[in-house]
Length: 385
Ligand SMILES: Cc1ncc(C[n+]2csc(CCOP(=O)(O)OP(=O)(O)O)c2C)c(N)n1
Image (cartoon, rainbow, N blue to C red; front, top):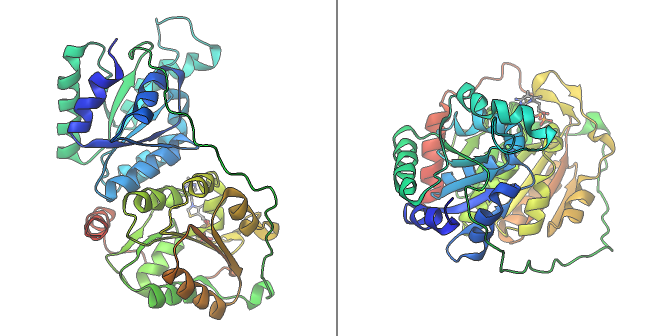
């Protein structure tokens, strides 16, 4: 058993000062110490996959990030680990607990199977891992191993934390009282029939024209990134080729770490429904420089146009309810252009719900630039701000 500071102080000296994750009772003293101690940021994420994406965004912005979660949630993180951090070479440190450790102390039945397969799952994902240090003498060699592996391979490193690895630590800080407004109202402004609406490419053209090259653009999975690439390949654009639904958490991580850089996340309705919870994190932290644009064609257009269930959903009302500061809705391209001009000049966590129809240019290609190349040049752009 070690005390949290024995690991966290040297970790901070190596630059690890951005923490995110979803709690586990084994992690309690560790997280509480991070929350209480100056020089660490902690973002409580709504699920483990979002935590990986937030940390990936922080990494692009030049931070060294640590994700912490219970092994029950490792499954929630598989997709962003295999499609985001692996694909884009983003070395986040992961600490997963080992509830249900085989041969360990008695644990609850829901942890039994996961406890048996946790390290096998890490191996299957080809993640480099080690047990979390249990004595003071093991800390520096463990951190050195992780640090060197991450720097050399640009890939995540995982520590597996067992029961009682960290000595108890009681949280000192009181949570800030949250302001609640239960009288929120919102009206959507949609005028057109489905077939009268614009398709995606004209939206992306307007966006590129209005926002130019000084705004970080994160484009969601599927045809959005592919069409943006066709409209014009720019170094301030990140094409999220996988990790569906993670664009918002990723853009949020960037926006938090680079408050002077405007970040726009271009989301899809299918993707947003997959990880709607990340809107709650955005609404709580309210990054002033984040614009969340939802292109809602009411379909999984990229995979054949199957309908999503968004026809009757007021995402604007949801965004307001989650605490976004500026909320817009439209289905008119001209109005969308005005809105973009407005939010370009304004500050405030912003949501734009833009209704479109499905459809793409015929013979839509795929980015010729590789994810690894996109990652490097986008990080250079973000970190220059
Ligand atoms: C986790 C995951 N599930 C499914 C897919 C396959 N997939 C790629 S794009 C896409 C549709 C995305 O729909 P939406 O966000 O509405 O965007 P649109 O295609 O309409 O632009 C799907 C299902 C994936 N890449 N990742």
